[in-house]
Length: 372
Image (cartoon, rainbow, N blue to C red):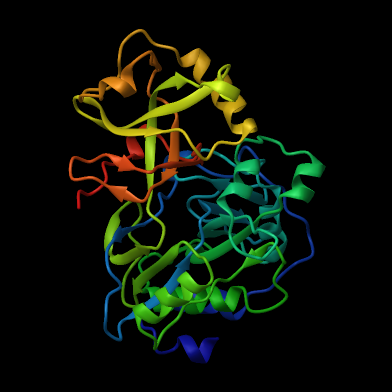
């Protein structure tokens, strides 16, 4: 790797040295140790801006994996802990809203074994569950998202993998200032041999057009693609034009502001949810959803919404009378996600279908969809 990184002036001598001397040790790391990460210095993930695939030779393309975004902090058995990490050795994983999800996904403990030879490592990636055909399945992932400490049978029935697509720190060196191309080369070196099956280095496609990659994603039933500028730095917490996402499936994060009872077979449970996005005037009404639920989802939603019951309507915008009739209002604290076919000119989601709750998101993360 030393010869290949010599053309990258942004790489310091120390960083080149730590990569050249990188080694793996057999010691087993501890998953989710309380003292591993200083929460005051958590890195918030860089976010992509929606748009059409860009053209030109200074872009690379990755697939969207329809999972849960996670930044993982690893400390090995080296001699100099990174500035964000504390001893003892282990792995700790955080969601976009800074929740520690290490125990929910113990498979990511493989990071500790994979990188036991480094003193510190921070990586960004996506936690993904695959269906029987090997395609990402958000539905299957839902079975794991609410299990704080999954039992062995749940781990066996719904295993996850960690698709690692960026490296943010290595051996105490901040790699976010490097270009994407440099970080990708570094990541490829780290995951080039004897990689644990729970860890995946997803493809980064150069020399092809975005339309070709998008067609491939459509052919294989993937969520979409993300274009990344080869010369871009990692911008923590920012939604950047250096990353452009093009989804094939229209989805929207929503906040639940109320629900209506069902009829017929669902008379004793939830019939539909009333959805919105937060604004300074309260929730802006986005529509309702009454399909896409499993019986287990309905039971879980009922249990979660019952203690959130509220007297006041949390919506600051008008709700159609037929949607508000007999509504049960709730405090707007639960975030979910829907798939929809169309967004009307007045900002309502048409033909929405429920995908599931998003415990990795806070209400303030939800944004109004862009009008057509």
